[in-house]
Image (cartoon, rainbow, N blue to C red; front, side):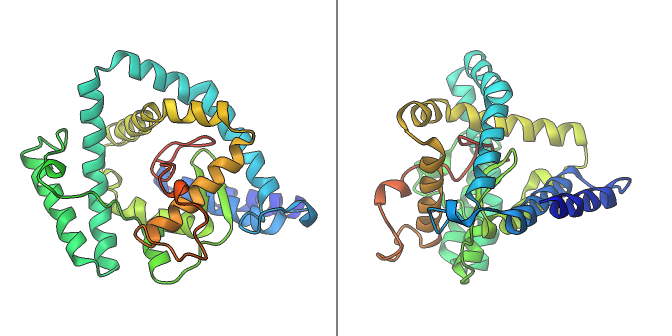
Length: 276
């Protein structure tokens, strides 16, 4: 563990003084955490789930994320929900969903799902124009479904295994594959290209708070009803990601319970973290 901490300290020191966008710095931190988890996991006898060999590390990060959520993010989300009229709240959610369709287009093309890519392009065009920059979801009402493909799904489509379950600091549930895919999601996110930092981070912050507000009830139910919220979130995340990689039809031997594929912990804040 000391050696891993020394390595990460050197990695961090090499980034200091370098002009680098914060998104890249966060991804570097996530990669460093992944290395620490891979190289510093101890006590193999404690591992109960083969999908979660980093469980001691993951539980520690989950507790850290939960405390941050309770102290900062949840109170902000509650206040946001109280002061934001429901139509405005829904419009803001639609606006960010419209932005996410850009990433979905790229990933559908990479998976050669051209009909889905065309649907995503149609959604962006209709919602950006008729839907006033996406604040009104006109595309769904005219029969264009939302697919929301990401680079983690694309890597899975081309055969890369999920790898170990991995809880990212501040960002929440992930896997080794999805952590790698997150870099591609950032690059194709239109917010990433904004050069005005105040606007860029203002929109990123608004998206995080809006997503957390949309999950207030679901998160409270998980925490109140689950004997072990960590295990619930892990199983929900992994099963839902498996379902999404196979477009809702995972192999029978791999899928454990169709219920998990319906639980929405894959896009946005969840117990133990928030994903931008």
